[in-house]
Length: 252
Image 1 (cartoon, helix red, strand yellow):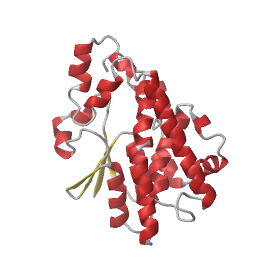
Image 2: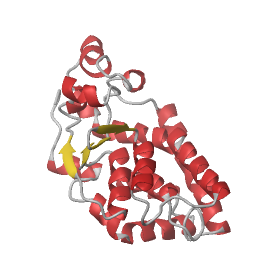
Image 3: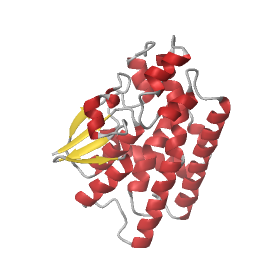
């Protein structure tokens, strides 16, 4: 039995849900409320000592890291394949995945956290912020310290926007050279892993990052039209929807 510990509006959770939906799999959802710090609960930390989502459990076997989970799912359930059979093409796909993890995945957190987290810090002084927010996080402590109570500095935001624009430009180059997907005719994990990041930027009203790149516009339209994408992005899976329906209060 597949069990997925995840958060609706987490981009890393979203890509795993897309992957599993593309395979036509059924799974048990365990929803982790990041606002209530469910990810830092001792029982959850026994599963995932990093204190992040998602976590996949398959008949007692625990798999961590969203991209690793996607590759695991593809190996365990090979039909339909989401990884190229040719070793050289597969290597190029994995290079894309590594780039996405190193660049846009990190960059998208800056505007996302500025939008979603700051209301929780209202009324906290520096000591309280360190104790309640940054300190307890095994993997995100320094990220939260950099963000601080008032959000990321303008230069951090600008750098993240540059990195996200670079991602869109590299996607445009690949889609122009081959298309309709990043690896050409084959729809792969590369498309799945970057899709929630593009969707997050659209949700944050930064679609101007690729509005002048018609290949990326068309790619995003094709992604959103896929049944698996619609399965993964159910109600309140976008940050804007979540905040509109669940206004954050200080210290939530």
